[in-house]
Length: 223
Image (cartoon, rainbow, N blue to C red; front, side, top):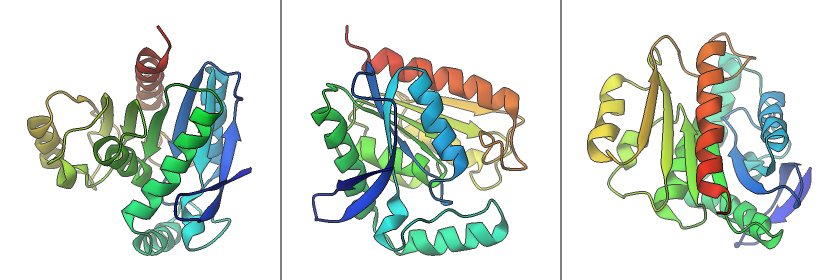
């Protein structure tokens, strides 16, 4: 863990993997369950791919050291905590991570988010200029935020069997933002990338992971 400070003076923890010597940099944004073992493993996997990684503990705005179980009770508590944090505050934490990575020597910074983090990755790409490429996995409510074009390349991943993100929303995004890369995994549900969830789909996860890493590398590598 490392500590960072946002522009409004809020200090928060972040999971760090890789190092400043890594050729690439990415921000990993959590689900509504906190900096779980799964999210830390994602960070470590990116580090193994050559990335310097920061994952902000965005729940620190209301409660420190939050790690919830992948259960209905965890969902309920996570949604309650999320409701107490305005998006602009969370984006400030993400901006602090981007600033830290650039100060570490990285000229370009990417972002990838999962679930709630997937929406935050989209909002970062559309409301700020803090990142150079963005990836979202099963980010809910993106369809309600398509009025503004992203300022960087974006890649979206959805599960075709995700009951929380209907196909009508996926189509709405496609219609409004045809320039955005969008993939739908027909037999995958919400959270298909997390081995700790019943919806884990290894084939969909592996394909989405490969696409995500290739996408980020293609836009972040120095030419």
